[in-house]
Image (cartoon, rainbow, N blue to C red; front, side, top):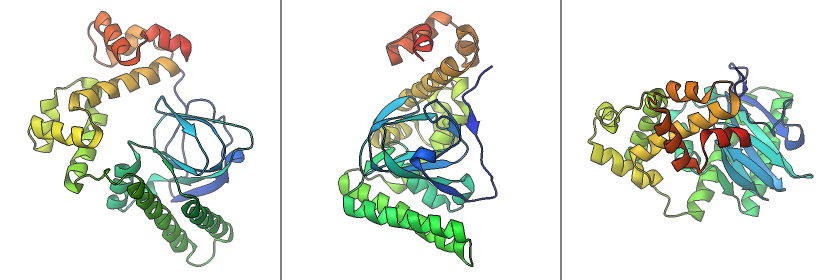
Length: 276
């Protein structure tokens, strides 16, 4: 079976490096792949297409792209694109609140365009991180962490300034993240929404209200979307038959799976596989 490749990292290192886009990896960025770590793309100049979890995003000047661990992505950069990539391990986010805030701002909206003056500051911080990584002198780790925290907070502030209505109740967002974590563990079982609401100590109505306020979708929609995403991953990067895939996702009736998949994607599973 040919799976989407997962590129791992040295888990004892928090900051894995800063790389120029043209030499950001020793593998083919244009093919679908995953990482066990975070990647933050800082695009100074250029264009192209960045596919994250099978959704295409345009690459524009002065933009930042967020790729979270285990997200499927590929990058099709136009020639002469300029920028850098910051790589961070999961271990960097020992501060759970910072991780939650990062999810809150960028997991659902992974691309942000930055004002030129702010982007210049970000670029200076990234250069400083590169320098500290190279010299590795006393307190380098602490200095690097301060630069990265400043990077995040500047980007979060920029997004708030651009989208002032994009503000969620902190408690609701924590519950939404908890729902996403539960969904990741159990979505293949196709359990009812009541299972998730019971686990979180909420009514179905309250959980649906939280999901709609944050992601403009019901719990059922989010669960269906997660099933479709998994089906796409398996169809595009495994040797499993379509029947094996639908059974692994707990669909009992092949015809129902075909209708379900086509209603969500506009293609049959076979058509999607052939187009990949």
